[in-house]
Image (cartoon, rainbow, N blue to C red; front, side, top):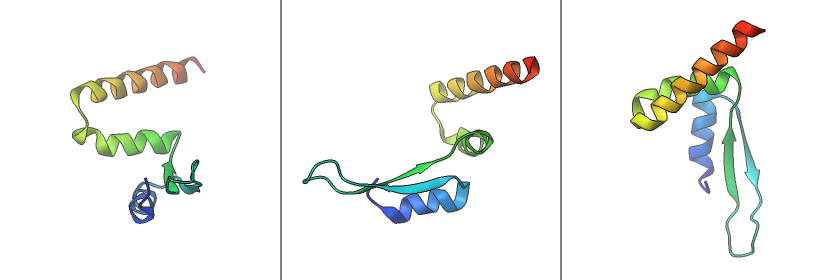
Length: 74
């Protein structure tokens, strides 16, 4: 995304990291990226779940289920 303020809002609300990605071609703009992983990512999606499509909700449930199985094996 090229709007730093929007990416910063995500960062402020959810945590994680945001950083500048230099443009790859002369006619492109610099972009900003936000990134979160681990428990923070699960907590973030949990907050967004009501706004996701049915298909994405199912994908999230599958990921959480797989993580629960993996944690039990550890």
